[in-house]
Amino acid sequence: MLAEEPFLFRIPWDRTHIFWVDERCVPQSDPASNYGAAREDFLNRIPIPIEQIHPMPGNIPPEDGAMKYQKELMDCLDPPAGELPVLDLVLLGLGKDGHSASLFPGQESLDEKERLVLAVKSGNPNVNRLTMTLPVLNNARRIVFMVAGREKASVVRSVLEDRQADLPAQRIQPIHGKPTWLLDCEAASGRRRINPSTTDA
Figure 1 (cartoon, rainbow, N blue to C red):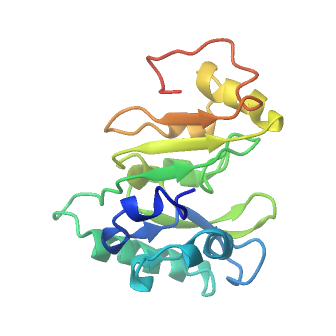
Figure 2 (figure 1 turned 120 degrees about the horizontal axis):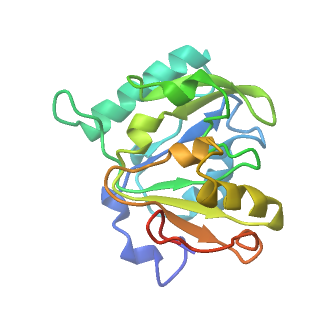
């Protein structure tokens, strides 16, 4: 929709930078590439300068890619000394196991406090990945979860209603406000209630 009127020319693409929350370490031509999908579905259809598109480097060793992308974030967003970069908007999905970005249950990456980008391995497919960490995600001005499908109804309910579940998505706790949840009817079908004190939904 953002690549079509009436929205296309309402967005200041010349002042917009696009980053990736996470990426699989596969070639950009691979069907599993987040960047490749975004390029075909969206990026090729909007008038954004190519130098303002910042895909994660999935074609080099994962640890090197994580360090390179952290430097790119810092160089581009240029936060004051000692402070974290601030993203204006972060869009997140939700896995059936409660993961978001490539932050999976039980992994040490959930406890990372210093690094902005990590190399991890997990998920389906079980491949090397790069992911932003909780400190930089939670520092965003706005976080929006977008979840669709009945197969996600149970985990949506757990994330929003079961404080004991300790799922990765529950650790998305932005310091600038509450996350917004955009759910289709099927993903929302397991909800018992809406609690406005914990989320915008």
